[in-house]
Length: 361
Image 1 (tube, helix red, strand yellow):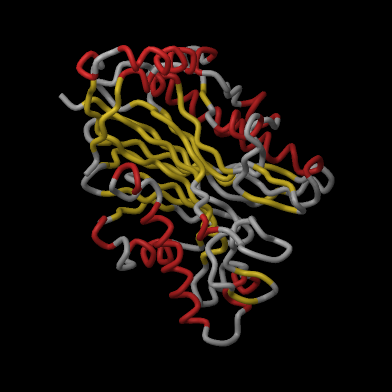
Image 2 (cartoon, one colour):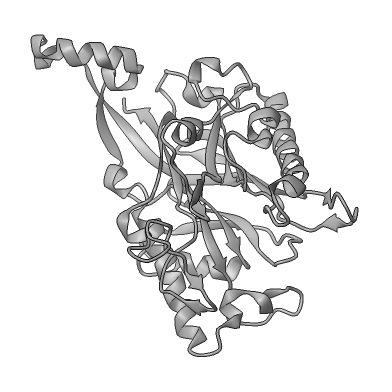
């Protein structure tokens, strides 16, 4: 099932919710207007070094954690794929009764590994389609989009190269392209951009300009879509290697934390409050949490006319089984690879997701 019932007061702001909490005992149940909404999950997940077991002479894949494993590599690969499928199958299910309709992914070596995930028994019935382009990343990792074919039909797809240079050597840094897919989600035109911005290798300050460059490319893609249609429904998602408060997101994308502050052609980022107010994160390093994985939407997705799909709410999928239970890294994401071996874990990032809802006629 993909329908939920939501009372109107659940869709209003916190002040109104507070008022209704006190008034509800004095209002008959029949006085509350209840509507039925169709709901879908849109998610993003860093699959942490999902490489196959074969050496590709065109890539630096021999340095991947999978290739460094010398014994029982094939079975370990199958286990890694299955673990990824398990998480994907779970994201949003408790609310929608379904796996994500749309899923952006990163840290995948090629289309084969994505196909292996999509064909896992836990996901096979979902009939996921895949959009993927090979990128020039020096590590050989790409981004991709998985979509349920009976819910989403791609219309166009394109890969956008990020040309950036090292501040000191002035040599080009080969990194991930940004993926744009436009299509119809049950008849609604939406545009999805999947990102994996440059890492913080060498330190946050030294690498900052690379992520600023990635944000500028992302903004150009968004601007190009909005130049055609100012009311385009755009979802940009990914592992940004920056928090919601960093300059790339705050100053370049100019993403806002409050819906009321989002102007026409503006961007809303629900993860700002999660990071600033709640201290939540998707990945941890040296006992500090970062919220690098984010999903942002343009203004048309936060309007209150639910005759077409609109943003409902966002979250971090950090269920207990995805976390370390003991030791120095207790509470961290339970990653797949550590100390040169396979942990039978999942990823060093938690997935993120949003719900889109539409009123059922």
